[in-house]
Length: 248
Ligand SMILES: NC(=O)c1ccc[n+]([C@@H]2O[C@H](COP(=O)([O-])OP(=O)(O)OC[C@H]3O[C@@H](n4cnc5c(N)ncnc54)[C@H](OP(=O)(O)O)[C@@H]3O)[C@@H](O)[C@H]2O)c1
Image (cartoon, rainbow, N blue to C red; front, side):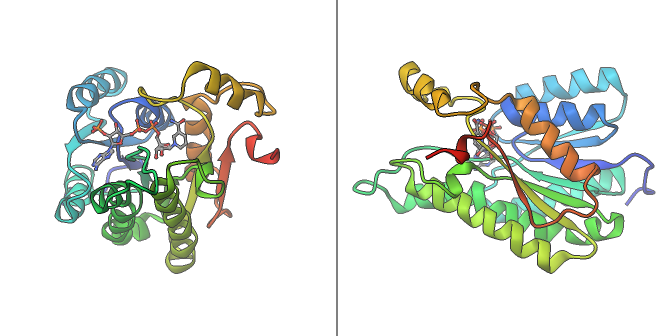
């Protein structure tokens, strides 16, 4: 392993685009060097890395992996350590999301949704634990308000995010006092490309006290706060939902 460098290092899964890319930009601007994990979005991740390298040279590493493959997970941590010599933050952001109506849901869908939303975050945390202990680092899991309040026709996604919420609390207990583990539960931030019809989106926003969708920056700000500015916070899941879970 190379000597431990001065700047903190974060490994972010699903960092090629959308919310993950904004988390990456936010942490990088705050001084973190990054391991940017992606699966299919290799071009996006490399373009993001080039953008960030322009800001600060030798500050990014792009790692490609299918998170459903458990054997690929330790290598993400090992490669990050081989490059930087330290790890301070793990952000479990990658996620599969699709409907699974009860009548037609399959074991294949179960496996896919649990792989990225629960299994990989756990085994990545396991692989990262020794390095995070050494830096008194932190983990942030991207949960979802639907872990608490189900989204119709998405039972397996909701269960997988509920498992991630439970993991957040369990690992906060088990990895203390060296490693803090927290979550961020977004409400509507970026609609999936095959997402709700416009009228449904407007109806959802009408039930949101802050009367707008969240931005990826809203989510990334909470991630940075939990990683850097909340040394006495662990086992918490912060809703970044414009107050949507306040109303029925
Ligand atoms: N967007 C929202 O409004 C919203 C709301 C609530 C919660 N969240 C949570 O916030 C996080 C970010 O949201 P998002 O909408 O930006 O996520 P997203 O675009 O749906 O997914 C992020 C990335 O996850 C990666 N991924 C999925 N399955 C994978 C697998 N098996 N192996 C490796 N990578 C995999 C994909 O990487 P590649 O493209 O490289 O394949 C994808 O780009 C997610 O955890 C999501 O559940 C988002």
